[in-house]
Image (cartoon, rainbow, N blue to C red; front, side):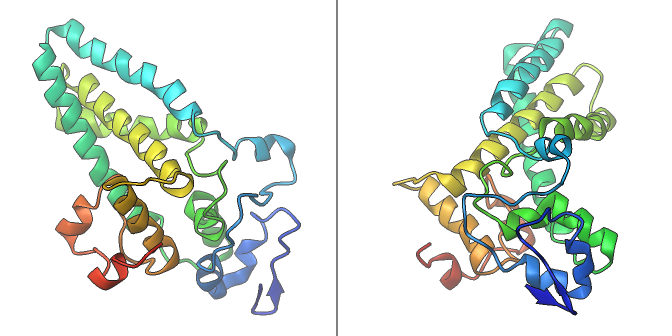
Length: 237
């Protein structure tokens, strides 16, 4: 745990330590500690509580919101078949956003104090402690904030009557993403495609971390050429 003369003390809150690693942060954060017990982030109990979320909170909180936005487009006059197409379109849009964020933001290389700290909070912690079950899904408060730019994006590319249903599809895609992500780490699928998807994702964590950015699907990895090599993807996890 020593880098450039600085030692990360895993028995103390980590968030404001990791920035001191400087350029060594990149190597440190990609040396995973496999334990279901996650580290402490903050000394404050309040801030610490905001970093921990049980997986089932995600569908419980957001699925009713999905239904409400679908109903908004229905109330405006869209038919059920039209609503299905809009929701599916929103889900597909989410998968592209999921891939883009994971590849270009979550795996950005950092070396300054605050950049390291920010990266650790948004994704580095997950690569360092990939089995921390209370930090595998996005905290609802953070999701609520991110819904604002996502709504504006959907509104920009759609019509006023279709925006709610497409937004609902994107939010549904997010719920599927978070629940899938949790299952890939803690579930034990016996059959494909779930078993293959788990192997695919764990390869990203433990074997080749600059490939395989899709979580719910490898679709965009296929399209953009970021699939892990076939030999790597076929190893037993």
